[in-house]
Image (tube, rainbow, N blue to C red; front, side, top):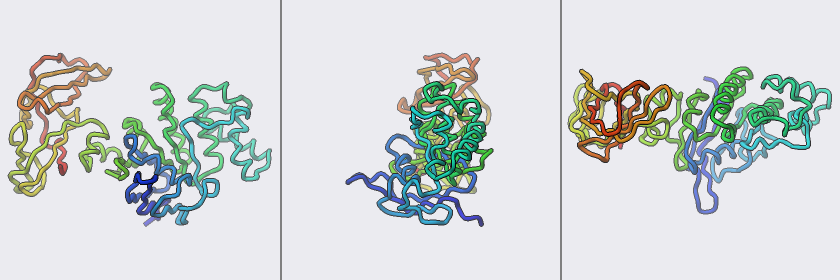
Length: 354
């Protein structure tokens, strides 16, 4: 079995009396693109800072390439960080910025220039070597920061919300470019974001954080399709959540008593167990559906056109506190005020511990 490139073991951290990381353990494989995903205050940026050497954890260890780097300063560990504000030197040329880390390593000027040009070509800025940062767009400056980080050939590249300052179109373009660059260079990327779509677009390893802990981790497809926790089901994409209690369990089928009535579903759980049922928007059906699990009727409260689909919010007539979130085709004739039947396929209901 291949040893992990990064091994974070039982890491906790406190700022004064406030604990921001709580016994976090995580392994990063070579060549992977890992996303640390979570809301503000979840601990993801602190964990990235610990990986980069900018913060020493209160407890626990960080091993990189099998070596204990817990107390090693940033300049002496095999990582480099791309910050959200790019942190480029305005008085230096683009080539000078990209070659700065090599200069600090004592690399001669000729070699620095050659490697800086190679790194700029890698990120699609081969002609920008002699320009100043202010002459570039935001997306180009982001790529210069990326080239500067990659030119020193780190074992791990850390990205602190690198796309947060870009507009939507440019952010999506840079997502494609980041993924392509990571595949070409093969360096492990660890990227912090609070954007779920960004996480799903980029990651092959998604780590969902909340309140200083890891709630869920794995391939983004699994985390989305079968989230491990209630929080993960609501943060990694949207879900309709229905609370209930298991009343019967036999032969891989359970009956759950809920506010919309008893539901028969595939799954295993002990009778009397409190559960939550999560249903993704694309799996909710508005209107009659034969053979589906019937969830009652609901009154449509909002319809939002989002290009390729409409996002529909509907309130259960049996329990108005229950909000159904559905995704329907863009051409669907549904309007606020409509009363609709709601159902889904039993196999699409995600069973969670409540």
